[in-house]
Length: 419
Image 1 (cartoon, rainbow, N blue to C red):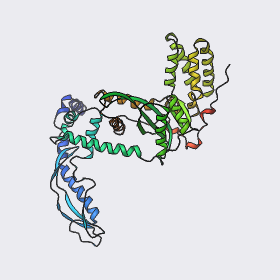
Image 2 (cartoon, helix red, strand yellow):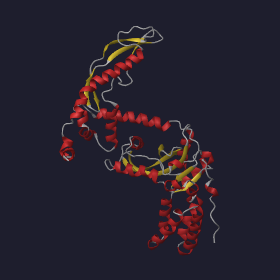
Image 3 (cartoon, helix red, strand yellow):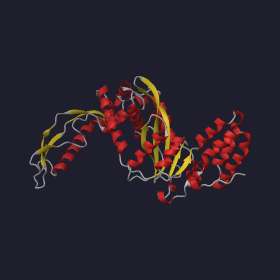
């Protein structure tokens, strides 16, 4: 009983809010060992390159130690510490010796990768340099962080983005592809204008989602989408089995031109919006209910019956609504030919629209971005840093074994003849 009471008292003290602002004794204790650990790891790296320890004489030796570099301060996740790294000279084929450069601690590095990642993470989350300093004060502990330091990090991010834009997709098996465009505010030529970003989000054989491309275009025209899809093909991406889109005419045309045989699924959310736009306000409830009978049916056959029932009912009540449904055709029901566990994920473009929602939230701190390139770089950073998280598709365990052996094409999703 006594021990139990003591435990409760200790735990209540642990959760006292004031403890969050006290000195972290554990971190302080570990920090004292950081310098020793860093210097030891760097020396082990040099030993592996030289293939010989300090003072060791062997026939396989590849060079020799050459004193110490000037001491420097390095900021790590335990705070700043002063380190002194050994220098080394490596023998090369032309007879000259090259100075060894640590891959773990590049010559001019003043912060560890973890600290740089923290700075970038806070930046893409909406903070300026002053706020970054405030947020990371316990980590930086007096280490200077200038605007130029943040700018250099952003430049490195730009280089990473440019490499991502052109990386080969030849060995990547993209099973499903979400496509969507959304507008962002950018300052161009002294004016804030709204421009569309065309985004492509793929689903791999494992069910994992991966951002494939971000393209800034003048409009969501067919030519704009065609250029974006041609870029994916040019980077070696094979045609996906299924494309999920909002049903825009330009996009639909581009899909058929680039990948004429792929299955296409029209987003049910976008289609419902179209239907309601054609219906009088007092009919919105009935239209929604009838539409849900189509997209939430138990199977394809039940959905086809509900589809035809919808047309028969609304042709006489509001012809615009019926025509809008007919415009989507069988592409509204393609998802029924895929595993039922995946229907929730395949019948909408919600997966990719998360990009738009999170980006809008981030933009509240700035209003508009200074250039078109900064738009794409920031969106890339939000995804790659995990601030816009991606998870596996629903029913990931039921992914088809291979793209070429899945279901039939959407054109074969035949709807029953009109009554």
